[in-house]
Image (cartoon, helix red, strand yellow):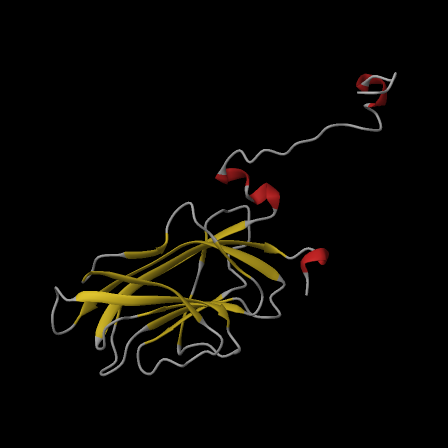
Length: 192
C-alpha cells in the first residue's frame, strides 16, 4: 500500500479490495431482483372511450420496481390504417384505486416470486383519472404497430406510490399492451 511499509498481503485478512461486476441478467436474482411481465391482447374497446393500461406500485408495497419495457399496439375500429397517437405517463399516482380489469403478471425466473407486488389494471369503459401525472412520451404509428415507450436498455424506476399509464390515442379502439419490469424489496435506507 502506498506510503506504508506494510504490504496488502499482510492486511488482506482485515482489508481487501472488492469490486462487483454486473455479469448477466441471470444473476439479477442473486442481487435480489425478481423479473415480471404482463401482456394483454385485443382488449375490447368501449364505445366513445379510450383504453388505459396502468402499472401501479402501491404506497405500502415495500418494493421498488425498474420498468425495462413498455409498449402499446392499437387498432382503430373505423379505420385500420389510422395513425395511433398513444400517450405514456409516469409520476405519483395520488390514488389507491385501480381500473376495472385486473391483469395477472408473470414471474419470469422460477427461483423468484411467482407474482408481483405491483398492480396491473386496464379500463376501456370509462378510464379513471389519476392526479400528479406527467406525460413522458407520445408515440405515433400505423394501427397494430407497436409503439415502444421504454425500449430495451432504458429503465424507469417506479417507487412506492408511483404509477405508469399508457393511454390510447383513439376512441373505440382495441389494443394490446405490455410492461416488463423487475422489482426487489426496499432496503431500510431507501424507505421514506
